[in-house]
Image 1 (cartoon, one colour):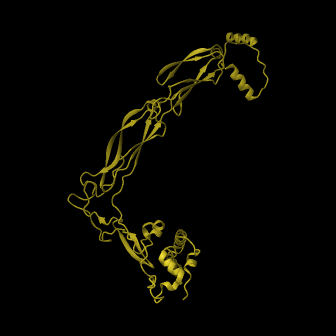
Image 2: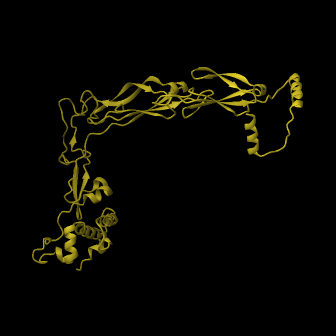
Image 3: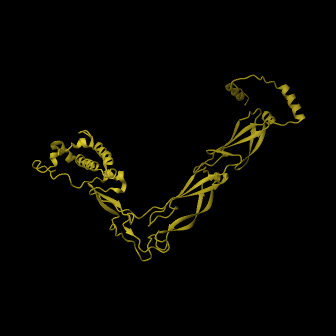
Length: 376
């Protein structure tokens, strides 16, 4: 039977590079693999044909011989001295092609499989810690208690009873894999008895029952630095759950939640608040005493201060995290209009109004802002 050209089998040009050939083969192998086409002899034949073509075209020497002699390069009696006589049929290392396609399922030809390690890293843990606003600003130390899996002291993490050891799995002979012949390929699957470890615990530890770990309560001192924000995560390496069979421990992540302040709002390392004042205070000027996170401070409000004007108290904000210096406290002035007045107050305002004539004419927002700046 006439063989199809290998380049046509993989649908690549004769000057295709190695990566193009590899990509084409992977695509076709996925399409025609027997596991995806059960009871389909045509697909299996196509799968073998693609493997044969890739075996030749992926090897520089074989490809050169094929380009020169065609299929005759791999047939008995194809010219004296031809180093490729003897046919295809030899074991081909195709594990790199299928390793990322089918995981552990395939171990092609001579690509030796590795036994799965019993050692497992411990699970990471999370602890949510609630802080007062001031605690986040200035920092705090607090002890927390967590429940976690720790290494069993009786078996030292082996899972076996004292004086006992894990034994070789009789199902896979300690290899961690079981092999099956499937068409053209030798297929390796993880041993269903030992889970790929190659060993079994016949006499488990009475304390941990072979799990290698036990649950216990653990106390940790959490050091919260000054200046942390909402959702800050503090990582404590190795303070998570212990690993199985002596594996490394996971990490503990302390996630911070910060309560809101009664009047301060945070913007980065700056604090903001609103200070209400009366119309006479805004018009005549005044001195205001304001509470900061570190005691009282005084703000001098000049005459004619408009609502919305901001005053900055430098260094009265939040400490810079892991650095020197602090943010600022920004105080916004809000001029309050009284909603209830007695007769005397109304009369005084009427007299004042007669001395302050304002032309109530509509104007653009931009012009209005300029006029505000002039009187600020």
